[in-house]
Figure (spheres, rainbow, N blue to C red):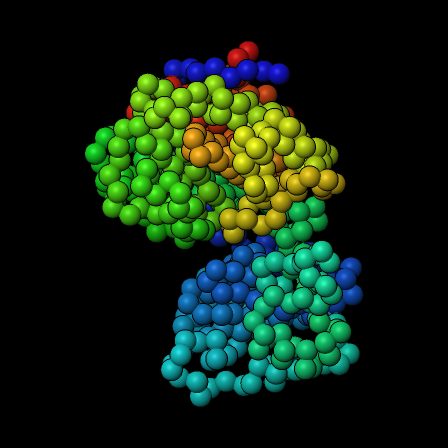
Length: 466
């Protein structure tokens, strides 16, 4: 078992990225083609994909379109042009989709998707729209929203459709209840879901958002000082307009027991815990520790934080990274983490990591007994959250992509700058911090593996002894 050490470093610079241009319609047509193959496997005649502001990722994956205010619906048959159905205010947003610009997608305005009391006098009934798309008693329709269920969660899970009732009921009235099923797994199942196989473009985009998020968190951490207000500290995120995937978090001594708290006007004080994070589409960077220069600043009950809590966590995360290899099962990694970080001491309630995409949590291969095997194309979030009433927490939350040789070659060919930065981060993690990373692991964050236990001395970080 390799041991942790504290090490003085200069925080590295890996450079920034320009936002990758949205790919052409061909990329989205390829995704639609793959979705149709999945439909054929499941015997589906139609796929009905729902989206709203919170649950947009499956639709955006297929179309490049996300609704900003309203609901939307995407109807995909086995042949012909798909149909995107939007409300009043999303009509003007249609050009964001390369499929729309290329004439590869039809669209309709369905005004009940619009907000209350807007004009509602220029729409067909939803049943008529669906009927015109060929949905009838001979159809077998899959609905995709944002989650699917197992039989242990919901009896008759195959028919547990999670999209709004008025939409699901309209489909069921045309096709019959037994012929309408939950098909969200087509996109989100950890071992076979389409969004678990990232393309070079997706990797480049997620690297771009990981850079934005990690540079923001780095700037916040490097500006922590006694007496600064959390509102002032939050300005160092440098938010410039990219869509957020979840709320900005900033927990201080006064909000340490409030999960997912944002800035509240609290003042930063020595000897108190602190955590912060920011998440854009495809990224979530978070760090947790203490406003301190050393253990001398900690309250008495938190003494031993490094030796008993944060250090062992960093050791476990080092081993976690070393196991990220195609063919390894998520259950093997979950078992290792449970043994290294027992619940009674570290209170890790959620999975030891998960998959990330446009949405912050897709699904997870990491759970006890999981036989899901890691594969090339997975974008993985090192979201392992320990908690202690005495030690508070520590965190190394950031993004990695698992890329086999052929995917690495394609990434290097299409996005050479992204690939070079990923290799540079790998070298930093292995040469400076002592991680052992498989060749397939490409770090996306600009603070890769950097965990400082004491934020008033940020250049003191954890490393693994060689």
